[in-house]
Amino acid sequence: MTASNTTVTRERLLLVCPGRGTYNAPEWGSLKRQASGSEWLARFDAQRREAGLPSLRELDGEIPFRQSLHGRGEHASPLIYACALADMQAIDPERYEVVAVTGNSMGWYIALAGSGALTPEDAHHLIGTMGQMMQETLVGGQVLYPWVDEQWRPQWSLRRDLLGLVERLHGEQGAALYLSIDLGGMLVFGGNEVGLARLTEALPPRERFPMRLHQHSAFHTPLQQEVREAARQRLTDAPFRVPRVPMIDGRGHVWTPWSTAPQALWDYTLGEQLVAPYDYTAALRVGIREFAPDRIVIPGPGATLGGATAQALIQLGWKGLDSKEAFQARQADDPLLICMGMPEQRDWLLR
Image (tube, rainbow, N blue to C red; front, side, top):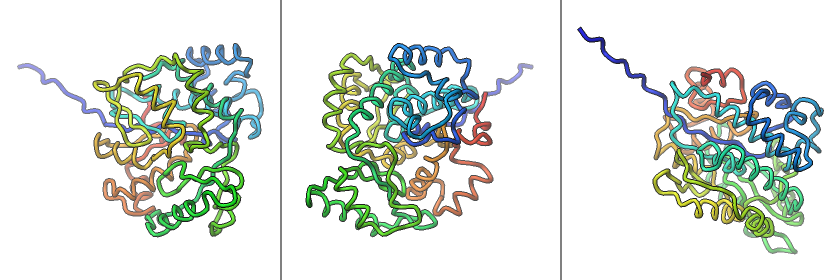
């Protein structure tokens, strides 16, 4: 009698990489806990020392957290990337299969590493360079405002009104305003100081909104044209390659291992992606419809992207989700969305 072979079916994961604003005071020290002895972290810190910057280990474990320091682009972006990379590498490959990778805004750069389109070191160089260039330029800023109700259900008329308001204000008395990120149940607007001031005055106060995002430029708007041109000159030789895992960009376009041209990937990353709106909701929609994941995973640091992701999933009606209450009930029983910045959820995925 021959023993039968047991095949273990791995769960399918859609990996969603976080962007700016996810490493804050509560996350200080998380990199030390997750990756203190990593060889790749030592290589990252060697790159930073060569550039005259404090190491990530110093920022995360020795220099007390200060938003004015840790929130700067040249520090915040690499810290977020390193935390996310540590989490991605901790996922048990025998139980889980990452079927696609996407991200929010700066999370697109992290997705390049998560998919294998850039090596960890090359992604660190790209992320650090872009963070520093954005900080040095710091053109305009971003304002965040929700368009869902208290149960995270979409209010489509409010969304239309918000987009219409921005369109009306743009161009008046020197105001420049654009949609920057379509972020689940929130819209992120980018603009110059005149535009943001007029928008903030026009928006009805709603709890803590409108919210001005600290040390953020007008990402994903035409105001980043100067950064776009400088980045294309400075990173001409960035060694993009064919990804091992499909990636979904900020338009909802899929870059597959069998169809990606590395030069086209470079052109999008250092081109349209910088100056056009980033549609995070579209990326999620394509991810769940095209790749049918069992769960969605957001690497750390923090868990601030979780709410926006849940709001998008409610809009899409994924697995019957239709409200905040339904989402929270499902999370308590068998979480569909795992935020690795939360220790109790991170443990689900460990080797």
